[in-house]
Length: 108
Length: 122
Image 1: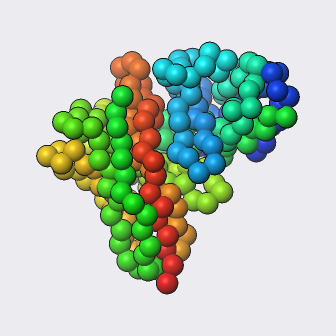
Image 2: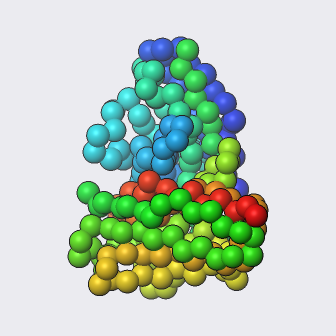
């Protein structure tokens, strides 16, 4: 099966913009979903479809795509955005669902 | 918004089995597609299996298909995950997840339960 690859850690200054990337062959034909996970909590959905946000997710979260890479952008990062972020998509073969290894976002 | 409430933490001996339950909002289980995801300490989530609406069947990740069974009781609005022959490295938080759809044949993991910690230790 294929994989989804994320950078392990990213940092951003408070109020600045940060982009978290997710790379994998499955993303050529599938959109990624993105999940935020804070310590001791379950993941929560922040982006699905091409660039859709569930109710309650601030519009500073957005998604984009280029070839086999999906990106999650946080425009004007807030202290409460500090968390682990995971991408997820269906696989093109074998196990139907993949998760990236996660990116730990630190807001400075 | 779907409510998803899982059973409490479990401590099991190696070789034993565990059953985790996932109760959803009343009278909704028939309309929901339930999946199970686990997360070992310090690692990312890992998909274990769930109901595939396009195949109209429960599908399992290859590495779990011999040890895991996913079932449901619609009369109790509860889904179940059973893991057999537990090993130390099965120690993880197990999540029940409701599959959402935004267009035909396109899905995402919409609602997550709070997670159930299963600890495997003698």
